Length: 352
Image 1 (cartoon, rainbow, N blue to C red):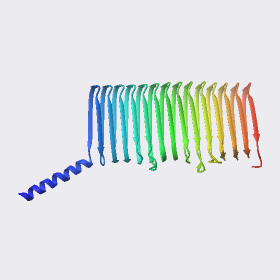
Image 2: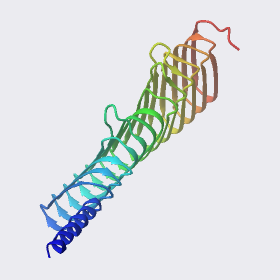
Image 3: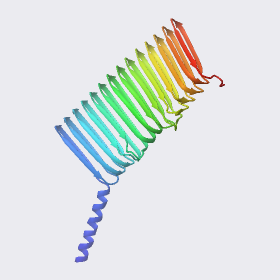
Image 4: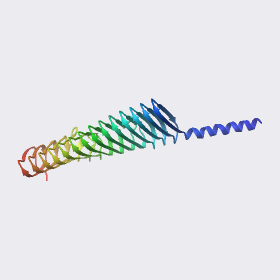
């Protein structure tokens, strides 16, 4: 009898271990002022939360491998927060209403997937893969918002082979993508009225940033701050609509940015573009504008082998180019009426 009891106890113990390694939490709430908190620690964990009502809060903390989190909220003033640590994690959050907030944070790892979707107004999405001294790899961040006065913030720190995407459609929305690392591709698509989007790259190589801004009164900005190992980055900004503005700036330290390219395309009326490259080698600037009242301003300083090409088509356009350094190449093409060109070059021109 004693042997049977010991065997039965051992079986229960092993079964409890198996269940602990494959936990699953499903929470469904209907009404208002609801709150759900899930804390899981193990492997292949799953958490699903559905809330319908007002002032709901859902919090999920997962640690280890293969974490999976899905949160859906319907109503007003909802908040969903997901913190994951480990590898092969997946997080999806969707919210409908006003004053909602999604915060997804992963403390580094590999094969990480973040997805967030919001409909309404005054909503916020924050996605981050960040841990000092422990870089992330193969990270995918996707954030989509439809409505008014929404904001998106995506952050990667010391990451590589990552992808980030922002889609905002509506009015008075803002988004910012902060990228630190190498071999990363981040894109932003904005449509509507009076929306602004910004991409900021710090160091790293082989990064690509694209931005497409459609509508009236929208603005896009791209910034790259490099160091001695920064090279082969590509920035592209496209604006379509009326009275749009765009800005690109590339800064190097001690000739710290190499072979980086800035491209700007503007279609519409009264567009303005300003591009600056400082302390860089072998970088290019390309600006193309179609429409009326456009103005392009491009500067390159303290570099060598740089190239600037500006194309304008329409009337009332103005192009200003200022270069300092070696081996500069400038080509400006304008077609229409009342166009103005100002070019200033300094330094050696002994290159080919």
